[in-house]
Image (cartoon, rainbow, N blue to C red; front, top):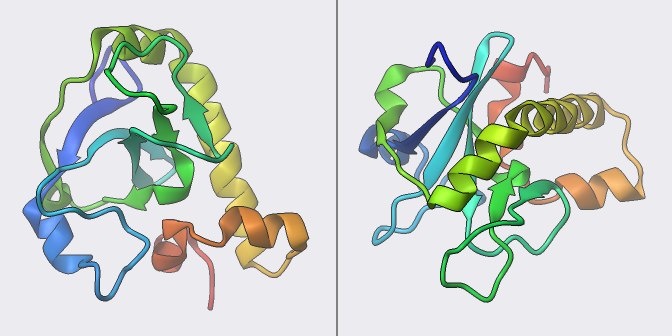
Length: 155
C-alpha cells in the first residue's frame, strides 16, 4: 500500500476476472467493455477492492457529493460489490479518477474506511447466523458471500 494514504486506486486484472467469472460469481461486477476502478483497502489480513459505481441506488456505499462526472446518477463506492484480492496477480493497473472525487476521497478516506469496516463486520455477523429482515435485504446481493474463507466464516 502507498505510505502516504491508507488506500490505492487500481483496476482489477484479467486474472481476477478469469477466476471470478460471471457464470460462477454473478454478483461480481464484470463488463467486458468496461474495466472497474476500485479502491484497495487493507483490513486485517485481507485486501478489499471496493468498486466505483456510476449509479449507486442504495445506502450501503459512500456517495460522492462533489463529482463532476457527466452523469445524472449518484456516483459512489459500492460496499456491497467489494471483493477480496489478497493475491497481487488480481490487482491490475493504477487508476485515475475524477479530480473532485479524488479530493473528496482523500478528505474522507478515514470515514470511508471506517464505514466499510463496519459493513464487513456486519456482514460477518450476518453470515454467522444473526439474520433479520434488514440484514437479509442489506446483504442479498453482496459479493462478500464468495469470500467466506478469507473472512473466517465457516459455511
